[in-house]
Length: 119
Image 1: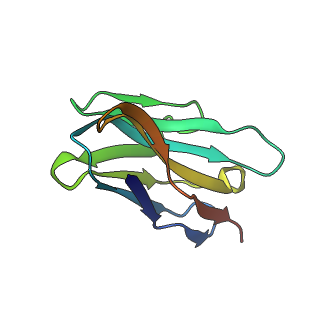
Image 2: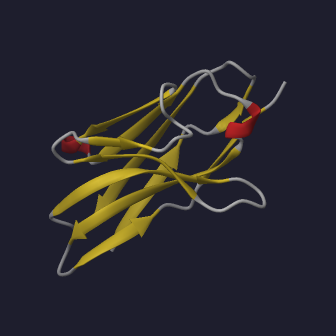
Image 3: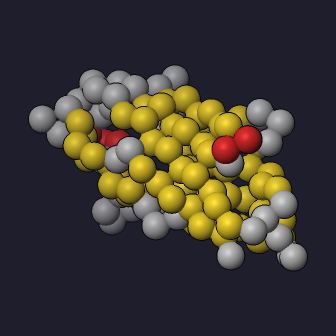
């Protein structure tokens, strides 16, 4: 069993910053990539960013130039630094772990953390 626990969401004013964290725990041998997706009301879930175990990153269009993803492999934790937040960034942010090696290989999702950007 693999658990992803997210933290760091909340309410922030436009132009502000937030830092999300997601820690993976449980019995696994390795995780290929960790990252974030988000889903706003009435919209499809979209990629925010992910980072592979070798440090390679990929950002969705919504994140380019404003968000930075990083990872602490020793702690099995991924971070998302979000700057210059806009009301359009309001969404539930979901942590994901890709190609988690246990007795098999699978993907896992966190429960989500709400980010609200509003004045």
